[in-house]
Length: 129
Image (cartoon, rainbow, N blue to C red; front, top):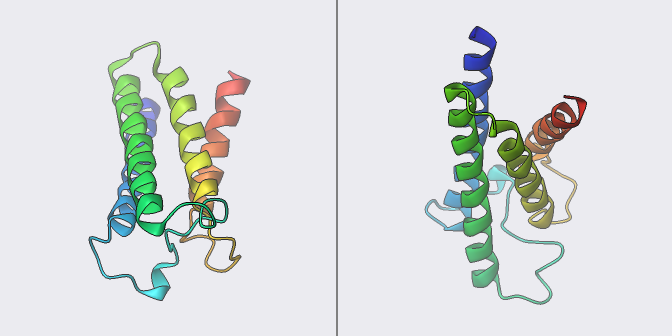
């Protein structure tokens, strides 16, 4: 029971971290270089205007956050489907982080490296169970 509570709270917090990227993409705070994440995309910058890229980032990071939080609550409530939803959240999150990687190898932690590691652990957990 305690492990379930700790896991659920950890997943909720992991999901909530995505809202920081929403704040940055929506320009709700003034950007400072030490924040690391630029909202640039190594894949989209050449073909989509920055304002549209930021909207896509807001939508995808919000989706990832919500899916993580919903499935963490499902875990805490003992719903059988929580692990399938958590897998979906981890995939959405990882793809979003990779999509909005700016191609610069500096400040990787601020750009989501820890999040990708957590997501890969979630995906591994899913396939090992």
